[in-house]
Length: 117
Image (cartoon, rainbow, N blue to C red; front, side, top):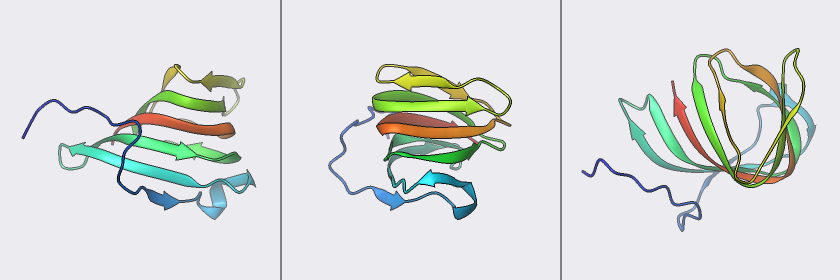
């Protein structure tokens, strides 16, 4: 098993398709696609590519730490009690454990994610 993993930003395999939990949906009808590409440490670490269509949802990180790198699209993230921040292609950010806010997909977004639970 190689200890080097290249993340395929346009995977050829079918994604897992889903949508937001009803209690997290704020507006729109967003759909999500996830191309999980690697796990480690007993599935505590996950990485891959995720895509969402326009809509607005509540984002709750709980105990997980998530690094995101936006490949395409535009999102606006508003931390609870904070100001909105816009991220677009080429931007990277981290949502730390305990993060609570609103994730608004303005243009269909695709990102690389790394989640540590």
